[in-house]
Image 1 (cartoon, rainbow, N blue to C red):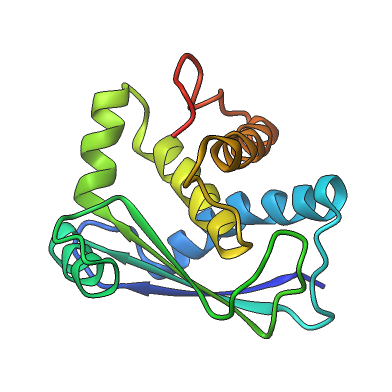
Image 2: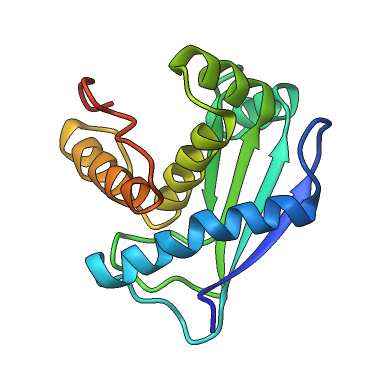
Length: 168
C-alpha cells in the first residue's frame, strides 16, 4: 500500500496533463517517503495520507503568497500543512498542499543551468519536507533540511542543489 494519496490540480497553462504530473510526482515522492521511513523513522498512517499538488502560475502564487504570508511577490513553491507536524510526528489523513508556479520554476532552472524537470523535482522534495515540519528559518534547521533534500535527491540520481552555498 502506498503512503500517499496524491491529488493533482492544474490551474495554469503550459503544465503537462494531470496524468503526467501524477506519474512524475509519484516517481519523485515515493522514494522521498521510503527515505523518510527508513532513514528518519518517519511514521505514516495505515491509510494513505492525502497530498494536494497545485500546479499554477506566477500570478496565482503571488496572490496566495500575499494572502497567507504577507509577501506580495511570486515564489517557486509554497507548502501548507493540513495539521501542524513536527519532524517524526504522525501525519493525519491529510498531509497538506504544495503549490508550484511554472514561470518561476522555469526562470530558476535557466539561472541554475538545470533542466526544468530536475528543478521541479527539487522543489517537490523541498515542499514535501516542509509538510513534515522541516524548515530553514535558522542555520541549524536549514542544514538539517538541506541535508535531507540532498540525500533524497541523490536517491533520485540528482546532484546536491546546495553545493558551494551557505545554508538558507
